[in-house]
Each structure stands twice: as C-alpha cells, then as structure tokens.
Amino acid sequence: MEILKIEDLHVSFGGVKAVDGLNMNVEKGTLHALIGPNGAGKTTVFNAINGIVKKDSGRVIFKGMDITMLKTHRIASLGISRVFQNPALFKYMTVLDNILVGFHSKYEHGFVDEIIAGKKYQRELRRALSRAYYIADILEIKNRMGVYAANLPYGVQKMVELGRALMPEPSLLLLDEPAAGLSDSETRWLLEIIERIRNEMDITVIMIEHDMKLVMNISDVITVMDFGKKIAEGKPNEIRNNPEVLKAYLGGVKL
Amino acid sequence: MILNQIILGCVVGVYYSLVAIGLVLVYKVSGIVNFAYGNMGMMGAYIALLFLGKGMSPLASMLLVIPVAASMGYVVNRFTMRPLKGISHSSMLIVTLGIMMVFEGIAVQIFGADYKAFPELVKGRPFVFHIAGGLVLLRRQDLLVITIFAIFSVFMALLLKSTKIGLAMRAVSQDEQTAKLMGVNSNLIISIAWMISASLSAVVAILASPKTYISPGMMIHYQIEGFTAAVLGGFESLIVAALGGMLLGILETFVGDQLGNAFKPTISLAFIVAVLLIKPEGLFGRRKLEKL
Image: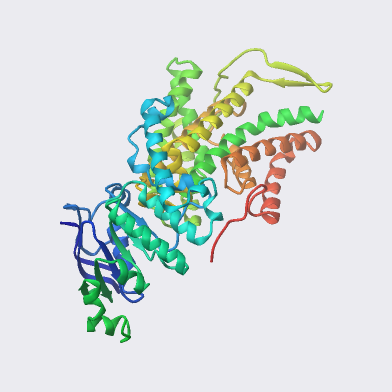
C-alpha cells in the first residue's frame, strides 16, 4: 500500500524547472531514498510535499488524501515530519522546549484547560513529556534537555531536530541529508537509529542523501533524479548497475 | 530625594513599559515594528468614551473596549499585514506609519480634534508617603496602573512559559517556517499577538487619558517613549523592554527635575540615538548568533 503518491509534479522558479514532471510512489513501511546530483530538485520535492513552495501543476496524495493545496501547518499535523539539511532549531529555546514544539499538533487540550490547569491539561502534559523523554532516550540526548539549542555541537543539533520531528508520531518522515556533516561513527549511529525508526516506530522514511554507502546499505527503494526528472527507480542492486544512473550521477565510477 | 525621584519615575515609566511590551510582542512574533500601535489604543479610548456616554461606568467601558480593540488588531493584521507578508522591514514600517495616519484622520473626522476628558477609574484621595525626608504623592490611578502592569506581566510570563500557545509563539518568533512544519498555525499565532497588543494599547490609552485627555494625537508621546524603551532592550525580550520603560521614566523624572520639563522629549530621543550608536543590540541586548 502506498502512503505517498506524487503525480506529475511541476515546480519552477522563474525560468528554471526545478521539478519537471515527477511521478513517485512511496510504499508504507519502507525506507525510500531520493538521490541525484546537486541541483537535481530533491529538496524542492520535499518542499513541495510540505507545501512550502508553490506547485505549478501535479498532485501530492498522502494516505489517499489530496494534500496538494493544503497549508504547511495542516500538512504537518496530518503526520508528515521534516528534518532539514542544516538543523533549523529554535536557538533560544532549550532542547526540551524544542522537542515539545514538535508535539504542538498532538495536544488535545484547549486554552481554558491551561488556565485552570485541569486534569486534561495535566494528562496532556504528561503525555508530551513522556514521549519527549522516550525519544530523547533513543537518541541519547537525555542529558542535554536543559541546554540552549544554539550551544550544542552540530551532530547533537541534528539529533535534537530528528527528535522534534519524531514527537508527533508521524507516519511519514522526510530526512534531508541526515548524514551531511557527521563523522563516520556518528553516521553509523544514525544508520542504526533510522532503521529503528522504520522497524520499531513503524514510520515510513523518505531520505535525501549523498552518502552512497549509507544509501545502498539501508534503502528499500531508491529514486534517482536529474534535472528535475526521475531517471531511475528500483532496489539498491538495480540502481547500482543502472547505466543511466552511472552516467548522470556517478560519472561512470563503478561502486 | 533620589529615592523619591526613582519612585515617581517608575510611575511614569510603567506606561512606557506597557507600550513597549505591546510593541515588542508584535515585533518578535511577526517582525513588524508597529507605528500604528499607539493610535489603535487612541481609537480604543474614543470607543470607551462612547460607552461612557451611554451611561456605563469607566471600568465597564474599559473592559468592554478590550474585545473591540482586539478585533481591531485582528482586522489590521489580517487585511494589511498578512497580505503584505514578505516585503522588506522598511516597507512594513512605512505601511504601519500609513495606518497610523489613517487612524488619526478617522479620529479627527468622527470625533473632532478637541480634547475630551475621561474620568479616573479609581477616585479618591492620593496616597502620601514620607520617604527619605521627602514626600511622594501617588494617585490611586497610578497604583492601579502598576497593579495592571504586574498582573499583565505575570499573565504574559505564564502564557509564554507554560502554554502550548506560548511555546508556539516563541517558536514562530524564532523561525516561522520551521514552526509551520511542526504543525503550528503561524497566522493564528500572529493574529493572537496583534490582538493582545491592540487590547493592551487601548488599556494604556484609557488609563493615561485622565492625564493626557483623549485627542487624536494623545498616544504619539507614548508611542515614541515606548519605542525608545523597546530599543533600549534591542527589541529582544519583553522583560528588558519593560525594564527599559522604567529606566526611561526614571531618566525623564530626573531630567524634568534638574533641567526642566521642556527637556524631557529631547533627552529621551537623544538617548535612543546614543544607545543605537554605542550599543546597537540594545542596552542589555545580546549579540545575534548568526552562522555564516
């Protein structure tokens, strides 16, 4: 069953066609990698899914629902989380507050409950905090909860952002170059976590990544883009030997 | 005598603090320096006057104006600021200046340019304190303003620290795009900030009106002083803006005492220039952390 369907998506900036007629199906429970040379339009696809950029034409269907015209915050609260290439944390907030913002769309209480601090509010607060610590435990950032986000090292910031994205129990997670800027050991650790996200939390992942070893290792399906078009799609083995991909993307180097 | 001046300065400054808080709140959440802020309050004061004319008590008029002012804030944001989102800071500034003049024009057309009186909310003999060998005279209205300031500060602190709307507000103020991706309806949050800000401005105008009288230009002075107070804090935090207001009030009282009242506005404007020249990030501001 497919969780996300992109049909004939066109996005352009002025005269530049960033995404040019992309079709893509993402199966539920898979780890789908989106690769391609710089400027191929990968991040634009993510922005189109999130509703950040204006689409010229085409449709985005999430769980059978057309989300093409929805506002960004509505799309997010339907269960699509996004992690940026460069951590976009709220710098002047603590790690805990950053992670709690991710829970915003899941709170069930209203403003009145907060004023009277009633049962419902306390229940929701407990729910949010226990989820926050559960995730912080997995990502090993529990001892950083009180630190201001701007003071964290880069690798930890990426973890916090991943944590924030996991807070609302999304069904689809968009990872934009999660391994960029990480050391080898951090990348191995990230690989473990991404597998846990897919297997234990049952979250479908779409990942843009340049680290070919990582991509080939953990992806179920790979879509290759070039100049806004899909040039290949398939299992890692098929992609590895696809002459079209080797030519356009890998410059003829055999993996 | 210095202590007396400080107390009197705080009484003046508390108005500036309230104005500054409203200005900084909107700036933080939506990135707009709202020059129409004071005049939105001025309109609120005129509307309170209408309620008063219908035979309501001053307090009831003020409370009734709060929802009216909030809707005014909503309308101004919804139909001028939101459609213009994304234009430069300076263009936004000009737009708010325009709105300020529109409000002033409307007020002159409908209510006329003469000064109108609005009674104090609490009447009675002023409190007299003997402090450090001198006398301090506090009107009951002043104490009411200080109380309102205290209550409002606690309200804002609780709102921002421990509610989901507050957390969302802080998120939007730091990075609107990312906040949206977390499912935060940023337009709603910005509207709420405008509504709080406009109501606050109306309350300040009504509280100040026994002193200044109600007229189309009544809030200009408070707008400028509140702006100065906000600049002292680098338009960064609500607390620092409030402190800035107090500081400005104290400064003005000293200047009025030592040099004469005519120097007050000059000194406060000179103070803005000096602060911007010496410490552009505000007196207590921190330098922006920006990665290249």
